[in-house]
Length: 137
Length: 481
Image (cartoon, rainbow over all chains, first blue to last red; front, side):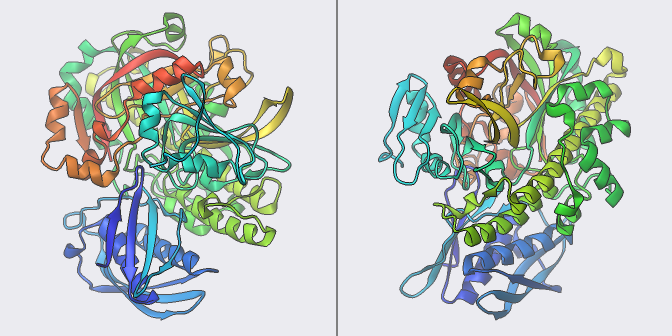
C-alpha cells in the first residue's frame, strides 16, 4: 500500500508508506494530488522541476509538498506522477509530470490550504518508512 | 479517545484540566456533560494541554464547546499571551488568517423573497466566484496590495464596493494597523493576486437566511433585526495570501525555536516571542492578511447587494442592505484584560473563537456601545445560525471570547462515505433550502450531520454566560465552493 486516508475531524490526514525515503516522498506527492483531483484523467505531457530545502527530513517533506502545491495553485496545473532526481539530507530535486488544468476534464475536489507539521514524524518500521501528514483544508 | 485526561467540574458548563508536566496554566473547557463525550472522541483535549505549554500564556488555555481536533491549536481555542514574555504562534491564528463571518440585514421578508429565491441564489452563485482555485475578476497590482495592506476594507469602499458606514460595523473599523509589504513573500502576493472577492471552498459559504426567532427584542432591534426578515451571512477569509503567509512564518519560527532552545509538544505550535524580530515580522505580514480578508468580505457583500438589486428590481434604500457586523474568528489581537486583579496588555489568540465584548467596552463600535458587540455563529447548511451578544462574564473569564460555529464531528471522508447514496441538494430543497455549489463532494463533506448542532453550542455559551442569544437564523439559500 502506498498510502491511506486516516480519519481527522476537521482536515485531511494521509498515512504514507515507502520502501525508501525517495519512494516515501514520491508517494506523498502522489497521494496529495489524488486528494486534489482524479489523477486518472491527467496526461503527463509536461514536466516541471521541483526543488526544495529543509533543515530536517520532515521539513524537507513539507517543503517538497508545498512546492508542488504552489505550482498546482499558481501555475494552474495538475500532476499524475513524480520523479525524484536527487534527494540528500537537506535538499530535494525532482520532477512533477502533468498538464495544465482543463476545467472540462479535471474536477478539483480539495483546496489544500497548507501542509501542516502537526505530529509530523517520519518513522522507520522494519521494512519501510511511514509518515502521517495533515493537510489544512 | 481521550478518556485518560483528568477533568474537574467547575460548574455544569465548565471543566478544568489541572496543570501537570510542562503545562504553564490549567486548561478550561466550556461544554455540557453530553457535549464533553463528543469532544473526548478526538484529540482536541490533548491540544488544549499542548497550548498550555506556550511561553507567556496567561490564566488558562481555553476551549469553546465547538472545539474539535485541529493541527497544533484545537479549533475553538483561546490563548492570551503576555506581550513581554509571551509568544505569537501563526498556527494559533490558523492558515486562513482573519477567517470570519459577516451578516448583512435587509428590509425584505421571506414572503417577498421566496418567489424569486432560486433566481436570487443563482445570481449570488454567478456573482461571487467560489470553489477550489476560484479566480476573481479583480487582479491585484503591487500598488493595489500596498493600499489594501494599509487601508483594509476602506480600499474596497473607495472603489465603490460598499458604503463608508460599513466601516463602523467591522472589528477595528476594517483596518488593522502595522501591515508591511516587505514582511511578505513574493509567493504570497502571487497566490492572492486573483483571489480577492472569492469565497474559496471547504466550509466557506454565502447564505440567505431568515430571522426565525428573536430571544432579546431590545438588542435585536439595536442590531436592525426583526422576525421574518431576510439576511445574508458570509463566511470566508484571506485565501491563498493568508495561507502562504502562515506557511512562510511557521518555517521561520521553527528556526527561531531551534536557535532559542524552545521545545514544544507539537511542531505545529511553532512560535516566536512577540518582541523578537520573527514575531514582529509575522505580525506585520499577519496584519496585511487581516486587511486582505476584510477587503475580501467587503467585496463579496457588495456583490450580494448587487444581486438583490438585480433580482428584485430595487435600489439601496428599498433593500436596506446594511452590514450588521463582521467578526474575525482566526485572529490574534492586542487587548487589555484583567489578570490577577491588574489590567495587562495581552496578545489574544482566537483560533476558531469570536471576540464577545460587553456593552460599554471601548473597542465595541459606537453604534453598539450601549448593547454590546454582535457575536455571529454560523451553523451548518441545513440548520440554524445564531446572533448573540458579548457579555461582562466573557471579559472576566475568556478574555472576551465566545464560540465560533457548530464544530465538526464527522471527518470529511466519513461524511462522504455516509452520504454517498444521498441526494443532499434534493433533501435540503425539500426543507426549503436551495443549495448551489461548485463541488458536489464539498456538499457531502459539509452535510448537516458532519457538524454538531450550532443550537447546542450556543445554548452552552448562553448558559455559561459568555455570550447571550439574540436571534436565530434559518437558511433558505446556500452558495458553496
